[in-house]
View 1 (spheres, helix red, strand yellow):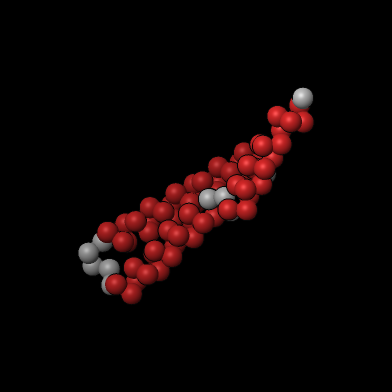
View 2 (tube, one colour):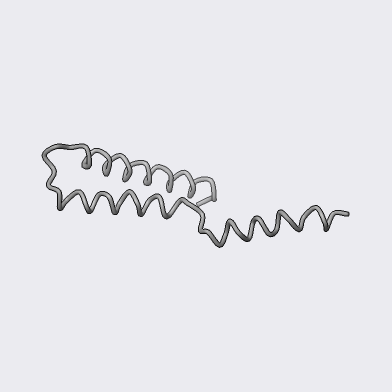
Length: 71
């Protein structure tokens, strides 16, 4: 499986999970105990796609050093 196919599959599955969670959160017949599960699903997907804070700090450090190295 190529990297593009893997990324596409991850996006499709994430979209399916997000749609299901949002639908169940909006659904009036769902119990409040069940809604906790769906909030966890949404936050889990968001956490999987968002970069970690240490990664963004490393990128800032690398970006700050790059112009100096080119000179």
